[in-house]
Amino acid sequence: MRKLVLCALLATMPLLIQGCASSTGVLPMGPDTYTVTGQSEFGPGYAQKKALKDANAFAVADGKHMIPTTVQTRSDFDSFGDRIHVYELTFRLVDSDDPEYKRTNLQRLPDKIIRHEKVIDADVTIDNSSESDDIYTQLMKLKALKDDGILTEEEFQQEKKRVIERR
View 1: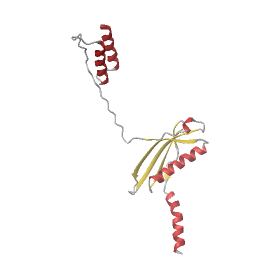
View 2: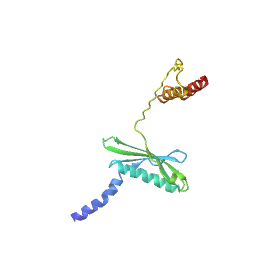
View 3: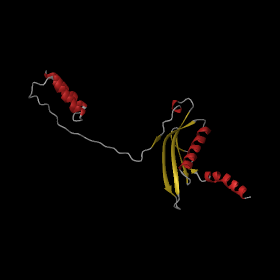
View 4: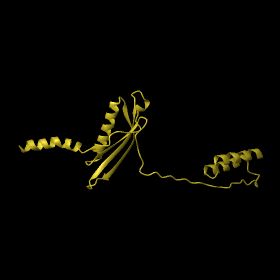
């Protein structure tokens, strides 16, 4: 009798766990672009499975194929303090003959975006006091200044023109 109860409990356990995963349902975000969010208390895999199942079912019902574009995962806490795993999926619907259907390019959204901009302002003048420099040497010096970021492409072209015209 104990074995029978244990077998019945083990057989229904996956169904109970599956029932604890939920989703927002598929929501439109633009032309042929949709999002769905899966949530589960039993781990990120269950949240992912729920979101992917909903997205695929939506695509099949529309007679198209689901192409994931971005994925984001996180963990939240509900009002009881339980950890909720969240899987956010953004996807597009495409036809079978669409070239995008052949290869999926899935990208995870970055947690942080760091932008670094450096502005270099330089007043560059060419010293013509040594006439012994040949054109090649002067052009190589200009190129080095451009490669080091001291001269912009436009400044480089102007100075190059001056060097060539002087000879």
